[in-house]
Length: 360
Image (cartoon, rainbow, N blue to C red; front, side, top):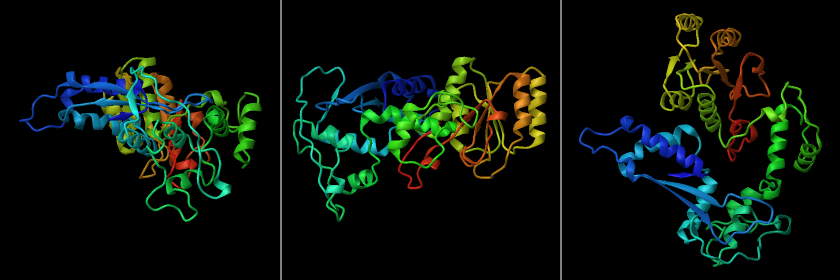
């Protein structure tokens, strides 16, 4: 299984080691052997970037077939896998023998001349990935041209990626992230060009935006599920491992995160006042909880929980309130005054073309 960093791969390794008993297997299958699980970090050789770090490495968790089902649970529910773009890129690099273990200290060529094809209006600096592969020893290792190129002469994939300037120079990565965080915080309100947004992100003074938060309160993740998974993980680290509460009928991966990556959860699926009464009674009898997770509104039933009452219970019985407002999104619903943490899938907000992923 492929992951974007060694730290994520290690979390997968720990999950496999600690959860062999939940493997879906037939009675006659042998007990999964976690001792054979190992992590291999691969780097792309020959790529040099003067502007800062780039995604030129990948971590591979090597597992026996008997552990595939369990490993799939981690990959599916955490949202911490790699994107399809990155997978395609590294698949080509692997097929051409252009990856090496991180521990390999062999010296490789690192210079290259980068060219791009197509009409002049598209002849900009090549995308990050094509520069990486073009800088490898064999300039014919990977071609971004596809069998069915675009009519303008540019390979279809590269055309889609660069047609509207979606590939930024790596030097702009931090400013782009800051622009996103400030837009979410309410500081970037106008519909302006990217260059203006990045300039505003660099120059704007820090402070609270119109939604009562600053960019320092916004944390970005590669996907919405990664945001939810890492929020649950952070709460367990900050406090202690306790059961959580899933209130309302949720997106399935949220429920699975609470069930698999901790002591478990109490599931209230109807989002009703009667269920809140039951929760209050359990808390009054001394039962402790880590956090209550819910959606506002719910997906797909669109039920809305009583956030004011839930917040009151959280303050009284000392559990966090985490709300996923993906369906309403932060442009339309303002739930922060009644919760402790807001999580959201930016995938649904930032592009109607389904060609980006993100969470916060």
